[in-house]
Length: 57
Image (cartoon, rainbow, N blue to C red; front, top):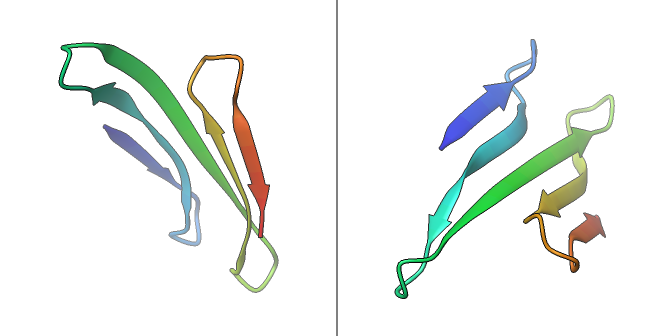
């Protein structure tokens, strides 16, 4: 897993691979968006499948 932070120390991205019991490896990217006060407002999870999810908080 790799973690990327911005100049404020806020988490921007997580990149990595998920391993399941069936020995399957999946690449995953999760990115985060914050407002000017540092509050999390959006999370995007990309699993490189058709059902990518975007959640706005």
